[in-house]
Image (cartoon, rainbow, N blue to C red; front, top):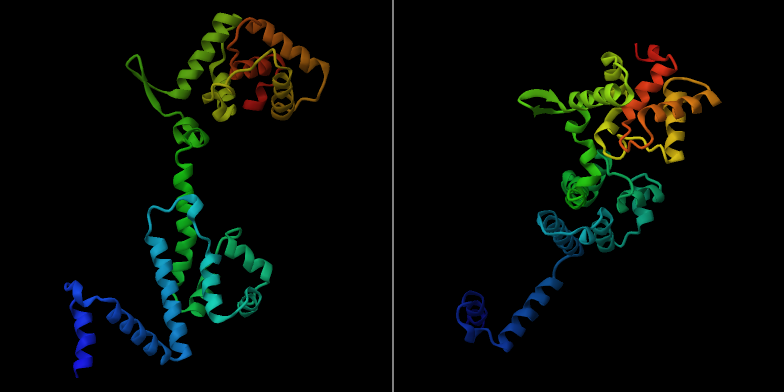
Length: 285
């Protein structure tokens, strides 16, 4: 009875440092190992698989994981398979998958689907959503990294696409309307024409989000590649004209009318003038 109490004292007397001597700790460790040996193989496997599940849960709850520390689904699957002494090829056969396809799921090359998540769930005795959450966890970590790359994604902002309302001299107008007014002023003041506002509006809309991009909103007359783009993508593709010397002459004429020394040749204005010059207003009807 005294021997049993010695172990009991160690277990419940945590506040008493004198009871945590090396001898008693060694005896407790030996006792744990002795009891562990009495467990069946099935019980040991179950305990080890439960430990892996806890590791996955810790991973999912960890909010400080960086991109270089993320773990793919395959990492945790390997832990399970090692405990079961199974190869990935054998596991693939069990799931009725080609080994190469399974590899893509495990490495994140291919997105895990609901069917496979359920197969993992039944095989490893886990919740199916746990496997989907590992995948989502890694994507969220990557997303947080990309979130700082404002310049890469700013062009997708609906404000740039639709032209969000802004206040100009007390009048509420859209950003696109403001640009159209600027284009109309160029046509009148720099080229000397009275702008057809309906056509100018349609041409501007046809330019898409490029009108909100400082580089793409203008045409550089000194860059031959830029002029080739005007010819191929607008005159030939948009207006449906065939390649000819006439197209080159039209571009040259518009550039000269706009003023070669004028650095800001707005793309919408150039396209508008070409449309008028080549009698292709019908494209925008």
